[in-house]
Length: 399
Image 1 (cartoon, rainbow, N blue to C red):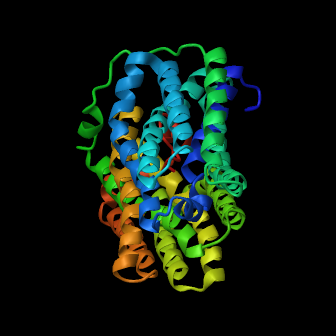
Image 2 (cartoon, one colour):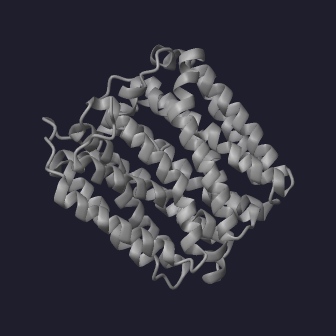
């Protein structure tokens, strides 16, 4: 299987996917710079994540509805166009309120794009779905690792430049997909907005979503609040989160599947969540060097969790994978919106350490749900189906 021998349409979609995933961590190294440039507090700037993921969560109910009516190509182009417009507008913001609003529009565009990209790649790729999924996972890892790096390089000049840079790269992706990607076959049945919510009636899928909700609160406390704790220059912060992203990619694509095969998905997930709880607790109460090390190491644990959660969510119910993915992501992205808002608030009410203690508790709650609901999750968890589970998922973003 040679994943490098792919049609131009696949490379165009994969390239745009890299940039889409870069957009998630792009603002990490420049959060302090944005706060300084717009005379905003840490809590106000953290709303960049809250608005982004709140809209993303709601948009999960619309992605299948949209793609089943306008097609995969049309959905990709619509998502890319929205990102180009709102990322560009974000760079012109004169206040933090404007920037938060533009990030919300960006979140809608990104949700439409990344929820459709893998299905399009699988449909157009040579070498079968396994090659397509590996290519997509590689794009995800590259984007998560390079987003903070690009943010640091451009953000060192001005906090506005990363937004303009993203808009430019996504515009190039828009042109490439317009030229190289042909329309994909549409599903026989159109997806309803309520289908993802109905899918959550399955106990196993609901359990995976609730556990992932608690986990995502921990994940995005690290991603959105840690930059203020580290209080480093954009270059240094970008280097820290680049290393974080590399570990996330390696453990998500390479290490997690091997661990699942050896130990089983539920044991791997439960153990990883407990280790993540310990890691963020040490991060919050250790010295600066310890915080840097724990931030980087959290990437490995997050990578493992992302892979296992995706497989559980997409394999545990009999719902079509796009529908199951949408329902699962609808629940868990609300935690990604909540953490960046509450972490600075908790700091204001208490001190800088307590937000990480709360994040440690939520990671443990995620593990408790896995243990208590293990029977509902067991059937598919014992036999990892990596290739199938990744199909039609929003793995990074999710992951």
